[in-house]
Structure formats: structure tokens, C-alpha cells
Length: 181
Image 1 (cartoon, rainbow, N blue to C red):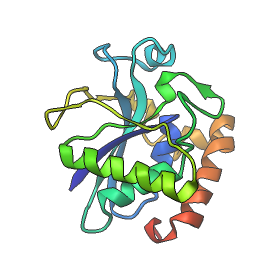
Image 2: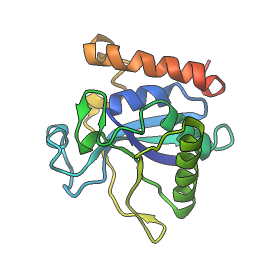
Image 3: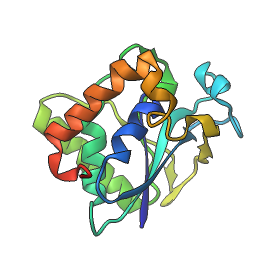
Image 4: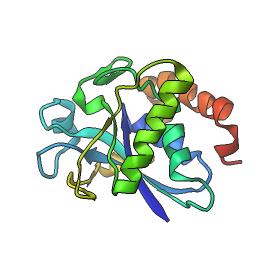
């Protein structure tokens, strides 16, 4: 199994997408990229911690490659929006990849270049925290009530109902071969 960490706006939305992807065995919502140890959701929401809402995706590379994980990530949010996704505004909603190795960083650069070429636009997705082949930004799991949010509370949340179904439709339409049955 391998792990990838990505941030593409609200972690509820990104988590919902990756829970439906073949080869993905776990998705955990959390925070990364900032300087505040053990941040809370309330603190991250202020935009003052430097952390992004992110997901840690555990996947089987024999079923889906890291390149495909990054392609799904870039294709199911808007990587051209700087420090926001739709009405969610602030650095905590930035589009970012937090590679865990030099190889993941190289794959992230290649995925962004592919997305730019295929879409005729420039992604503002950043590649963050890698120094000397090691991710220097610590991962902090989000509070329990954020985990598997779409499967529970999210389906009664008007924000989620407005944002997540279009992302899932895009996943099914554009990345059909990666969708769990």
C-alpha cells in the first residue's frame, strides 16, 4: 500500500471523491502545511494556522497508480483557483500536493503538467513541504466527526448536497474506470 496527501478545498468533498475510487482502502481527513501543532478545525478555519484541509489517501498501486490518484485529484476540483474552492476562501482551501518522497514530487509535477496541457489552463496547485526527500510538514488527523462525513452527516448538510454530488458525477463521467462498482 502507498499513501498520498492532497488538499483541494473542503476535505469533506475530497474525501467523498476518493472513497469511491478503486484501489483506495482508506481516506482520512486532516490538516497539513501549517505551523500550529495539533490544530483544531475551528483554528484551521480562521486561516491563521497555515494548514490546509487535506486528505490522506491509502491505495494499492497494483490497482491504481499514484499518477492516476493525482489525475483524479486534479480533475475533481478546480486547481486554477488560488486559495479557494468556490465559496470556500482562504489558504486553508488551497490546492496542494504534499509529496512523501522525491518520486511523489516528480509525479506531482508531471500530473500538474498533464492537467495544464489537457485543459489549456494553468493550475495553481502547489507542491509543498518536501525537503531532502522527506515531507517536513506534519499530518494531523481531523476530529472524528469529520471522518466519513459525506456518508453520515454530509448527506443532510446543504453545503455538501450542493458541492459533493457534482464532484461525484464528474468522477463517474471523466474517470469511470477508477470508480468502485
